[in-house]
Length: 349
Ligand SMILES: Cc1cc2nc3c(=O)[nH]c(=O)nc-3n(C[C@H](O)[C@H](O)[C@H](O)COP(=O)(O)O)c2cc1C
Image 1 (tube, helix red, strand yellow):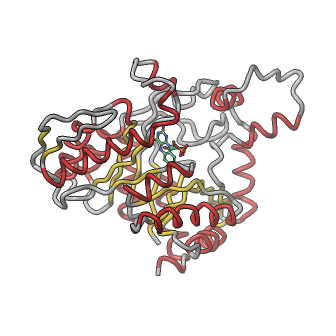
Image 2 (cartoon, rainbow, N blue to C red):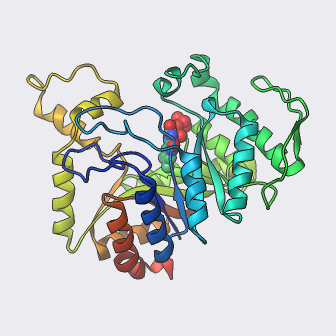
Image 3 (cartoon, rainbow, N blue to C red):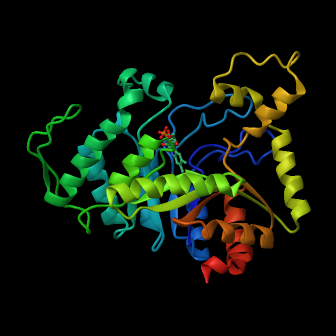
């Protein structure tokens, strides 16, 4: 089973919490994480694209580096690990992204791939006047289809003449191509349409993990059925938030501590809820909101042995080729996971 890390390109990683580690994103932080991941034997790193934060006391994701330039930097200082940058399709032309990918493919000696983000959060795009319009919600995977077709043509043939509904190429050229005539594409759509797109054009599909592995099994089955229809081999990577401790009790206490500090303002922004009247809010409402403090990424919490055993269960799910980890304190947890969890995983032998 492959292991990857969703690296901290935004402040505070994936926890909207005042009691979780507070940090700004920086090249140094991501470089240290990447070097430790490579030393530990992780197979890949992925950075997201996020262009507008959620605010709140923790200024959640108000601070974000840019995905392609970060990965180009990491490509130059790593040797083995695979690197994926994310593109938000409305923000960049496919011919430019194809060329950026060919360049990072060269810097990294063929270790680079792209996460295709069709774009769901209008405010990230309307702030720079590139939101295509509300038709885009319905059509974004059709748009993505033309987008990746242009990139694939440019990589494989050096030219695209595609005349589509959204893009008009006119003898558009690209050279030099990536070394394998293309770079891997990963996608993370969770809708049926998103998964169909990945089954037709992607190499790996990300699924958001939950603690209930039956839900993961169902989502994996949805992707596999789409891949059967498209006749392509698409691997599944599942996203989990890993919280480790020397004992299960230690790890659970740490998790509860993070959850207790949930930044309700930031969560409210994310969920688009009306003003939360904390004075009048029921205890259930606050508890429910606290539950979203890590963007609902499935938590795996426990001792090193517990985490290894849970991940082995995930590895046994049909279609799963790997797991991508979200951590609390990245440099520390990356090393700890490599030293104390990986050696216990049967699925890594
Ligand atoms: C692992 C993973 C990475 C993602 N990366 C990004 C990202 O970088 N930027 C973003 O705006 N959305 C990101 N998303 C959201 C997806 O691209 C997708 O829009 C979302 O899961 C909803 O699925 P749908 O588009 O099929 O409705 C990510 C989701 C997952 C699970």
